[in-house]
Structure formats: structure tokens, C-alpha cells
Image (cartoon, rainbow, N blue to C red; front, side, top):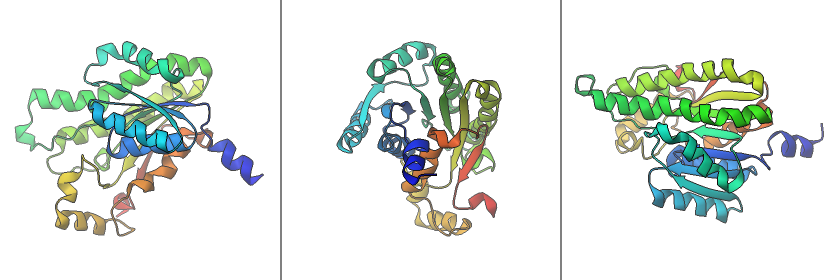
Length: 259
């Protein structure tokens, strides 16, 4: 196979449109930038407008096409309106990255109905209903990519993470169920489960050097993740390179779950 055809064909996202939730910071921001570098037009969404503007400016500076729609995913009753606004820029999304999420880190005895419902709504409910809203257009085109964000806590229980872990365990199963329902229409549905990466969400962990070092020691590789470690898997799962992969949760954790 010609090397240029292989690289520019399988992994080239030119002509594709991606929607990345949580695209204002952390892993979502990095994934948005990576998908844009591969050639897709990218819409980023989050609650904080100033962070979205920075992401769009970064992508534009890199030569990519991007815009943003400020939106709170807790309000899933307006997803149709949200998707219509997203589609005004470059057309309906072919790729959905559900990167938005919250982790309130509450002891189990302190969890309230409100905090439980908010965690489940943002981390688990909105990824499904947003994907469901995008599904008809992907089905019509016979091509789509849905990338969910799972977690180490999809498989393991951590302290002060009962609600968060429950939501991320649900993402693992949601990804399989999406794949079972939608892959026959050309829509591959997979999840990335990151290990410990330095983001706003994991700041409480990385701000404690002792805990950060302990987590690094627990990996097979011997270090915590760096955001660029997610670039390859992001483009792979967003592109035609993953045409025969669906329903999988891929752990990008340096071997944390292998030990």
C-alpha cells in the first residue's frame, strides 16, 4: 500500500465535521485540536464562553476550521435546537466526542439526590441523548463516529467517586449498546478511558505530588499521562482507520489497569 495513500486516506478527516463537548479545556480541548489537525471542521461546546473562544483561536492559529456554541448539557430538552445551531457552521456533525463531564468527589454518605442526578445527567444521560439527536443524519450518510469518554472508574472503584464511577461504568455499557443499535448503519461507537492526565478535573490529584507520584508508580510505563498521549487514539477512532472497531472501551492509562 502506498504510504501517502495510507496516511492521507485512512486518517484524513478532511470534509468531516466534528462536535466536541467539553471542548473548552482539558482532554476535550486537546481532542478538538487533534481532530482539527487531521482536517475536520470542529465545533466545540461547553458552559464557559471564554474557554471556548480560546480553543477556537488555537485551532484557527493551527490552520484549522472551528467555531463554538455555548451550551449547558444539563438542559438536554433543547438538544434539537443545540444541534441545529451547531450545524449552521459547517453542516451536521459526522463525529461526536462526548468529552464533557463532572466529578464532584463526594464521600458516599454526603451524596445528595441533586448531586447524584447532576453527575448522571452530564456524564451519562447527555452523551446518549445528544448522540440520539445526531443519529438520523449519520444514518442517512451511512457514516458516523461517536467517541465517549470513559474512565479508570469504569472498571475500578476509587474513594469519593461513587456517583462518578457509576456514571462512567454506565458509559462502558452505553458504548456497547450504542454499537449494537447503530453500527449496522455505518456508525462506529467507541470509548476512550484515560488514566491520570493533568487537567482541570484532575487538579486535586496533581496538586498533591505524593498522590500523583503514587499513581505514576502504579502504571506499567512508570509515569502519568500527557495530553499528547491521546492524539493517536483520537484520530484513529474518529477516522476510517477504525471502520471495523465498535463497542470497545480502550484504556489509555499507561498500563494502570494491567497491574
